[in-house]
Image (cartoon, rainbow, N blue to C red; front, side, top):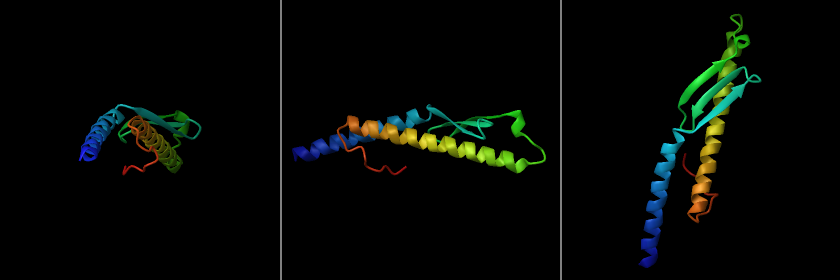
Length: 107
């Protein structure tokens, strides 16, 4: 009975920490780049795009597909960095609670 209470308390602590971490992720920004820095996208770790910078030499009216590809690549780079940041923070949180850090989280 005592072990069950302890497990329930740990589960509640983990839930509270996860909710807190989710809120923090909206304020942590990452940058994704492409084309050697021709396009830079700023995104939160929750996936909200906050900004985009496009170098003037990336804008060629004769080749809009190139700019489209650079934007897609920069967004994907930012998303990958956001996902990695989220995974790293989750591992840190779980480790601090004495839980295995290699459990896959459903996000």
